[in-house]
Length: 83
Image 1 (tube, helix red, strand yellow):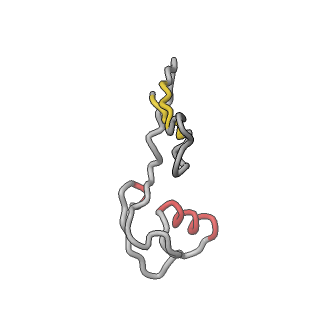
Image 2 (spheres, helix red, strand yellow):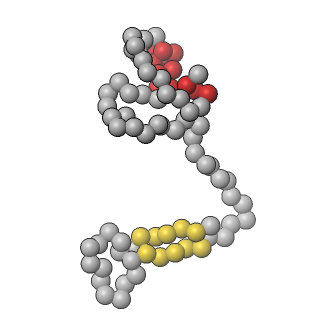
Image 3 (cartoon, helix red, strand yellow):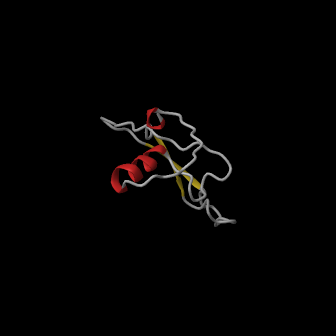
């Protein structure tokens, strides 16, 4: 594996003779690759406004609180949670 350490990358002008980034080569006997969650947010303008939620959040409102999340919804899905 490769990992980049940002040593002085956050500074507008790094000190002289100092590296901005350092590349680490990682050698492991075993590894676990976690490619990501099953549910990924769909990117669109305004997806961080109140009332916009992922399918798992809507399911939690229904199962935990017996709350109806909305009267009218627009559903966009990219996995089984949406169905």
